[in-house]
Length: 391
Image 1 (cartoon, rainbow, N blue to C red):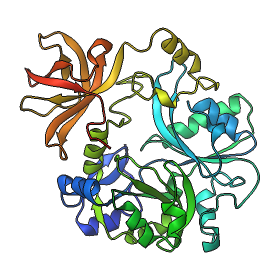
Image 2: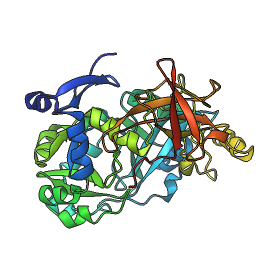
Image 3: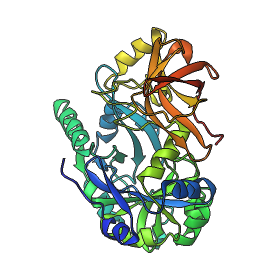
């Protein structure tokens, strides 16, 4: 896969970041150390460049119908400025990806949302009803999935003769995540209208000027801490990034932070080919609205009505020395396999080895004693329902 570089690649390189390939993007994995960056987010504040995430814009008279057919949550419930977490499933209910869907100001045309921000002045800060017209949405697939998502949306639209415009706008957007207990203070300093931003509730978004750049700011994140995600035109990424005088963080810390919270990683904790899972198996049944007619709805209704999945996503904590990793078998302590891990790390916050994965239902109760096979040896462990931290 060819490697793409985010708009801030040169800035990160000058800062001394080390890089890794992720979803076809050359992204910073760490700037100083994973532990230092992880601790900054848990105890103070850190900033992540997450411009590798995809951005797909959907607008037009049938935009809501199209979004509701291809995501598992109820998009019709969103007002401008609202967002929601959802899954994207196939006909069998298997997750192709997970995503966040944002309702943009009505009347924004697909393919021009990022560019239109530059036409806004400070008077629009906090106003997501600035335009009128057909509904408009922005949804964020995971890195490297934007092409497949765009194709899926376009094919479904054409097959069902829906009146909607779909545009892959990934190259037009940059995204900076500011996360941690001091994220509000950091946003206060960077925003021209801090009250409009720091007054947001979780999963709300607003228009705001950040670092002198008109941006879409949402109170969302992937760390378990309070925080914001700032979406701005890619050409203005450096001005936004530079507005935050905080610890820069790479994907290494992002992974340890999300693992402590039990958050799914697409392509690892679920994958339509390597790890096919439904939202119910993956522990995100709360994003499934069976009252909507999305692709995969009938299969998921059957799974729910038949008593739920036989395996469920949960966490384990090693009691013996070792580090759990994705792919390691989980046993009952007597060599009988009862599941496997999909993610694992040494928790920087707890200083304990933790893992995530799928176990047979009868073993998922918190405190259940199990074993993780590490390099051929059964290591004692216990089941922990994520998150591992009290957040």
